[in-house]
Each structure stands twice: as structure tokens, then as C-alpha cells.
Amino acid sequence: MSEKKRGRPRAFDARQTLEKAREVFWDRGFAGTSLDTLSAATQLNRPSLYGAFGDKEALYLDVMEAYRAESMDVLADALDPSLPLRDNLAKVYKSALEIYLHGETSARGCFLISTATAEAIQHERVRDLLSRSLEDFDGAIEQRMALAVERGELPGGSDVHMLARLASAVMHSLAVRARAGDSRETLEALAKSGIDMICGKT
Amino acid sequence: MSEKKRGRPRAFDARQTLEKAREVFWDRGFAGTSLDTLSAATQLNRPSLYGAFGDKEALYLDVMEAYRAESMDVLADALDPSLPLRDNLAKVYKSALEIYLHGETSARGCFLISTATAEAIQHERVRDLLSRSLEDFDGAIEQRMALAVERGELPGGSDVHMLARLASAVMHSLAVRARAGDSRETLEALAKSGIDMICGKT
DNA sequence: CTCATTTTGTACCGTTTCGCATAAAATAAT
DNA sequence: ATTATTTTATGCGAAACGGTACAAAATGAG
Image (cartoon, rainbow over all chains, first blue to last red):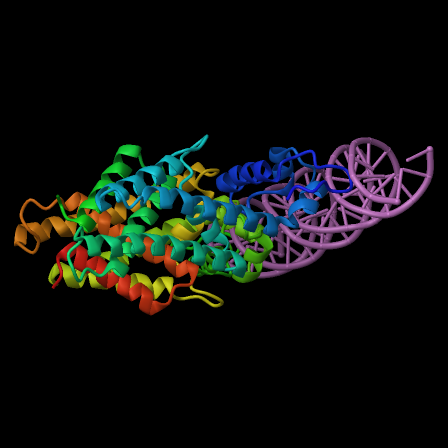
């Protein structure tokens, strides 16, 4: 690791650059973001962007992948098996809303649902990465729910496959509604109802 | 009505033009669609588009509004109060999937969720119309559910406000997943689980 | 020091973009 | 027929677009 490379050293951090690029894509979408805007936001001129990430689609895919990976980390955290399933779901929705409700002019919602869906038809690789992201999310929740059945937190014979996808469905709705401008209170109420519906009303 | 106008008559039908424009926006998103593409799809040259609808954003808003209105018609149909609530929801999801799963290269999902969310931050009027569309949808379902409580289809004291929003949440998820490429079978299974969850299992 | 290698910054290229100016065409009113 | 009015069609123009060529700058290797 970290063998010193030969030529002129980079004057930027790739990770930070991806974060800056994500901010812009998040607000304006993929097609709505120009390389000039990206260049300004990242403080990198276009040739440097190309050298480091390739063309605009490749950069966008990198940003998507980083978002997916971070989301899975946050999810894994929220699904801590030492907590009750109900608390797990509450943490999942709470951390999601923390992300969705952040934004400068208006709440930005989920990066993938708000921007990748728009490109999913024309850009197959975007669609595939979006699809994989949704699957991974469902899978992690399902895994935790399977454990909940073993422990008796959920009734034996529960369809954890579908329960997990319903839990994700509530998240998808939170994402869309946040982007549409719904208030935090409204969204928290939906999250709470979703938990009650999945785990039983106490 | 239909008083003959003075000048040269239009050689196109505004309604059909909006439908053609919608196809293009649906596949490519708002920012990803150029006026040339719209012009080709609608068989109208740009000045005619401008004369009839205004600029690209105004045209997109017209398309959005038409989609919203049609969706509400389809929804009203599905919510026919002479049917059981369970059948209503089944029709709602079935008719939604009919729309979401149509597409040339890939399933297009919901026009609003797939394309309007991307623009919602930068274009306030898009965000507002998106928000109103979601509210109207929720409201229509809630109204039907209130009736269901009166009739004893749902337990007395049911929180129809939240139940309706959970029913919508399943739809939002169907929309996102359809756009991501999920199969019809997968989506129908989610719809069925959603109905069971809301109306009770059987 | 010299050279190879990599990144940076400027400047540019060809294309596409949105929007409009202008004139021709088609109709109703007079 | 002439005029007023509206739509159509061609085509322009300035700006923005994605992408790259090229030279200067900054490092390690020899």
C-alpha cells in the first residue's frame, strides 16, 4: 500500500472529490449537471476529472457506488442484532431521514431514488447499480428479520422475505416524500406507522 | 365552445402532442430531453412547440399535470366503492403496474417518481406539482378507507390517514422497483403482501 | 543533473443546446 | 380581393455542452 507514485502528486483527495460531486448530482440530477458545475464544485479542472474518474457517466457511477456502500454501512449499524427489531427499524428510518432531510434549498431525499431512477432507462449500468442497491438493502433487512423469527421477535412462519421488502417500501416512500418537500413530522409519522404495521402495534 | 378561431388552424392536436412529449420525458427525464428530441417525437418544429406550450419547463409541467389528472381518474376507477376495499387496493396496484411495466427498452415506472423527483430541487414548480400529486393520491385512498371504517370493512378506530399513506408507500416502492427492472412477478408479490398487511391476511 | 512519468492548467474543437427572428402559408373578417 | 390574424417552416445565433490537445509544473528514478 501507499507506494509512492512516480510523477507529479495529486493535489486533491479522490474521496473528497466524490463527495463534492455527489452534492451537485444530488441537487441537479445526472443530466442536469454539467462538467463545468462539477469542475467548480470539486475545484478540479475537467482534464483532472477525466484523468481520475473518466467521463461523466463513470464519475456518476463512482458516486453511486460510494453512496450504496455508505448506505449499507449505515444500515448495518442500524440493524445491530443486540437491539430489538423494532428499535432496529426505528434506527433505520431515523438515519435515513437524517440523510434525506439534509439539503440547502430543499430536502434532497435519497440520492439513488431521486437521481438514478431518471437515468435508469437510458443508462443500463445505472439501472443495474440501482437494482443491486435495492436488492442489497432488502437483503440486509431480511437477514435481520430471519434472526428475529428465530428469536421469537416475529411470529414463527412470518414471511421475512416480504416483510423486509415492505420495510424497504416505507423507506422508498420516505425518500420520495422528502424530495417532494414533506415535513419531518409527516415523515416521522409515516415511519412510525410503518414500524407498527410490520412489528405489530406494540 | 369551439368557435372558429381567426388565423391559420393548427395542424396538430395538443392532447396527442402532450402524449408524445410524455413518452420522451418518461424515458429520458426532463434535463435529459432536448427540444430537438421533443420536436422529432411530436412532429412539431420548435417554434410551434413554443407557441403552443411555452418553454421546455412549461411543456413539462403540462405533461406532469396531464399525468396527474389521468392517474387520479384511474385511481377513482379502482376505488369504486361498490367493491370491497381489498379488491380496490388490488385494482389500484394492478392498474399501476400496467402503467409502470410498459416501456420499449425497459419498464418505465411512474412518470412522476422517475423523472419529477430529479428536478424537484432546482425547479420549485415541479416540486410543488409533485407534492400535490402525492397528496391527492393519498387523499383519495384515505377517503375510501374512511368509508371502509364506516362499513366495518376496517376495524373501528383505524387510523385511515396513516393506512392510506402506507398503501401509497407500497405504490411508491412498486414505481421505484419497476424502474430498476424488477420483474412483474416480484412486483405483484409485493403488491399482494401490501394488501395483506393493510387489510389483514385474508 | 537529466530523464521519464504523472498531474495540472489553458485553451480549444466540434456539437448540441435553447430560444427567437423572419417570412411563407392558411384561414376568417371585411 | 384585401386585410388581419394565427400557425408553420427555415434558419440563425449566442451560449453551453462534453471531451481533448498541449505545454507547463512537479515529482521519483537513474
